[in-house]
Image 1 (cartoon, one colour):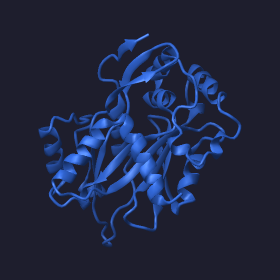
Image 2 (cartoon, helix red, strand yellow):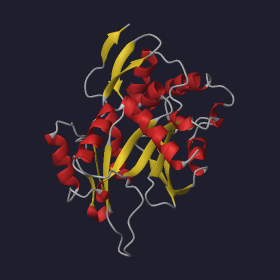
Image 3 (tube, helix red, strand yellow):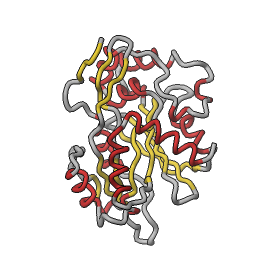
Image 4 (cartoon, one colour):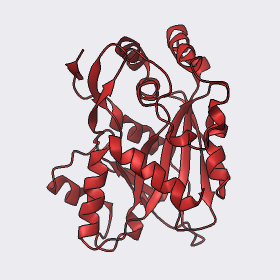
Length: 272
């Protein structure tokens, strides 16, 4: 699989559950922009055979190399990013939920999901967009949600991109991230305001903003319910004192970006 084939597969799967991303992308193209992605983010559990390392293998096979590790204590997450030698290709950011730090009930629910996986599931070349490979009830989703939005999201959606991130520095018609945010608000997109609409700063070499997640219908074993799916992110990177572009991430800012999938209102049960 080529890098283009891999990224195209991820984008198609992502936009199927995140229609706003396709609309925003088209708005930018209509302005004459050539949209580049800063990074692509995926989620998983730190369960055997499906953790960060397993999810990274298809990317490493296409030339992405591992870089820095990160820790998000409040949300019980570990993460790492991968970078390609081709500067036009996005970074890959993969996080995993530290199950040992969760409650016994959450661990039991997740264990019940993971036990449904075939023995060779992690060897799938399409693992990053394999979708939800287990049966899960809406009741179990709600239990997970009470403790961890991350745990609930992955239970409901499985293996797929959580968000693509536009490289704001590569846009020609926006002088800064504030201008892009104003453009999105003008076109009626709802931004994640947790911790401020723009997270990070020039002093930290990275500014980020994101939309709130779309709500889409998900079929659980006991109900079809509209729940938050994925969001679209925007990142502006600054140069380090040595002149190199900053390629890492700011945990405090990313922590707030994760809240783009928080439930803002009770899900709407559309069918039983």
